[in-house]
Length: 289
Image (cartoon, rainbow, N blue to C red):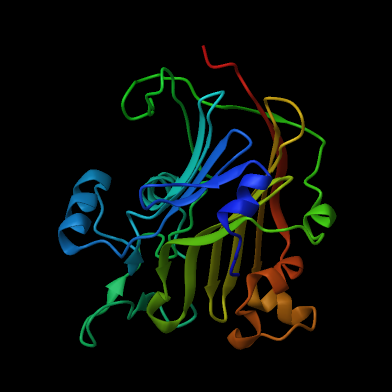
């Protein structure tokens, strides 16, 4: 999705592009920035192995890529990155998805090798974003100050208005950031992405983990965030989290196709997968003193 809007048009609606080579936008008290970098180098990967205490990683990790949203008045910062996502993967430690081949599966190894899968090789993560509150114009991160302030999300009955989001409104900024990806040894796909689009009325973000183990299982973990600017200094931000999961055998029992080619686009098949977890929350802003 290409967005072609010049600075005069942005200025007319109270927005401006970020400077200093950064990709993003300032609008209605928000600073939204996407950063896309190449995959980790071997040296960087070695450092991650030491910090995360594991040698198991997705084939492609875009470890220096990120998507960051800052609300300047409140010091609210919401961001998405591969490192924190893999922390979530390691903590959840799901059992490996069983494949029909055998107890031992030739997976991302040399032809003469066989490895026993004793870890979650799908890199499924419960991660739905990182949060910080910064003060005095200096960002204070969780890793810097122990017990530092964090955001407050409250369960709510309000829902993200997807119909309104589908209306034809000018898109001022759009980007998609891939955080990690793995083809599961040509047996499927494991993909973690963050997409954002900014309109005059607000911004919408989709953070998605998509898994397809061919012939066995599909898993979709979506986090949607919608910010409505409104007239108040503190906008309305809703977060919708929905996990779906289903086996190919269950889909076949309902008469759906089971060939992997039919399931390349998670957006199309998401409604076929049973809901495992669903909740909606609203962000409670706290004045930044």
